[in-house]
Every structure is written in C-alpha cells, then in structure tokens.
Length: 310
Image (cartoon, rainbow, N blue to C red; front, side, top):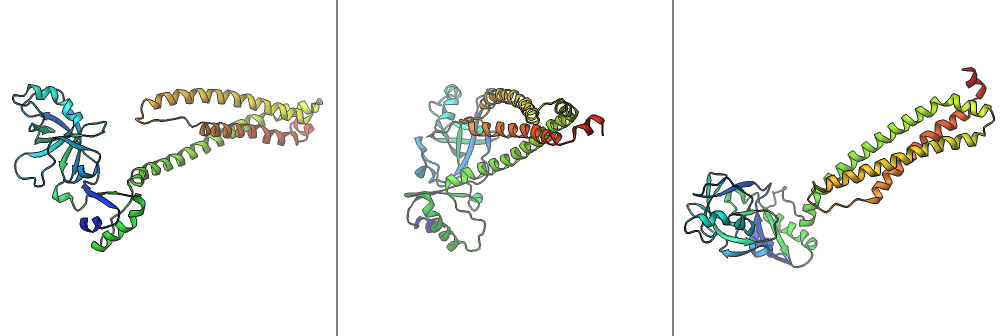
C-alpha cells in the first residue's frame, strides 16, 4: 500500500503514526532520585516521520530502523531536554542528553538517541511504531499540490491493494482536525438553541401572566376615559423598562463570564457581537410580545363585564 500511494501523482512523502490518543508518561533520569517529574506526550512514529514533518533531529540520530534488543531508543524534543538539563548535569558522564537512560512511569527503561527541534508547546517523546500497531496506524501523506486533489487517487490506490478493507478513510488534515470541532460546535448550538427557547417561553409566560392579572386595572383606565392606544403604549413602555434593565444586566454578566472563560481556554477567543445582539433582540421581542398580546386581548373585553366581576 505504501508503494502504491507513492506512485500517486503529487505525493511527495508519507509516514505512519499510531492511531488513537497519544499517551502521557512521567520521565525521570535513571539513577537520579528527585521529586521533580517531567511529563511528556508520546508519539509512536516510523523512521520516515522527520523526513516529511516540520520537526528536525538536531542532535544525535534518527530512530533506528531495527528496534534491536535492550533498552528502547527514543527521541525527545528540546523542551524535554531543557527540563532534564539539571538532572543530567548531576549524572556522572552525562554531558549531553544523547545516550542518557530514562525511566518512563518509573518502570520502562529507554535511552535518548536524539533531540528534536519542533514548535510543540509541550514535551514530546518519540518512539518507534511497534509492528503490532502498523496495521491500524494512520498514514500521513504530504503532497506537492492541493491536498484535496489527491484524496480521490489515494483512495483508489488503497482500494486496489485492500479491496476488502472498508474502514479506511482518506481525508485532508484540515478536515480531520476540524471535523470533531464542528460536531461539538453543532451539539453546543443545539443545546444553546433549546436553552434559549425554554428561556423565551418562560419569559413570555411570566410577563403575559402579570399582564393578564392587570386586566381589571386596564378596564378601569378605559372606563374613566383613557384611550385604548394610550393604555397599550403604557404596557409596552413598562415592558421596555424590563427589557432595558435585563439587557444591561445581561451585558454586564456576559462581560464577566467572557473574562473568566478566556483564562480557561487555551486559544484566542473573541466575543461575537452579532450573537450577543441576537440573543438580546430575541428576549426583547419576547418581552414586548408578552406585554402586547395579553394587553391587546384585555382591551377587547367589555369593560362593564370586567368591572362587574363577570
């Protein structure tokens, strides 16, 4: 399958990477007792990974093609090497990270074979992809042109080799990284829509009930000569005050919540003014409608019947 994909026009390089979640391990230098623990995320890759990625081995050598025997050879990125520098300086003969023996989670011995320069904001430890995981690994492909144009030919090349495999999915890296986010966003929008609907229904019911309770007051105002249009405007103005106070309090709470959430999310998050305006407009329309519809209905009732209590 690898050779078939290489023959697809536009394919520049490919590599294998373990599928599924990348585990996290605690790293300590063998023979050096310390309470400090360095955490790293493990990436299981094949020997062609660094030939096609932005990361580069700057010290030591690449992962061995043959795992051999003895302690497993791993690569660490510069962040891990920097975090281990103090411990390495206290280990006799460990002038460099290369060749240093580490313990993963206190039980698995490994040896540093090289240091990788990358842009990762966290510690990374690279291991050779085990043979037992090759069949289920992800195939990462770099193309010379647009990735979308190579999806079809790559899918055909895979089908030609493994016609019975129905679980293979070919997609671009952008689609793969944003697919889950889009699904989560869709679910969040559905939940938010339901919450907004329930809030609007509850608000309308509460304001409408209060307006209906004032039916006798409305009838008295009309009976003593108040124009019906003026009474309706009065109800709408009172609803407008509620809208003004609610929007002011809502904007203040939104600002507080935004500042609080911005410190918890590791991404650039901007407040969408159109979303805020849409929510405020929805609540304003529900409040004014809850004042107008019952008020309009109350003005159509015979005032004498209301005053007599019928």
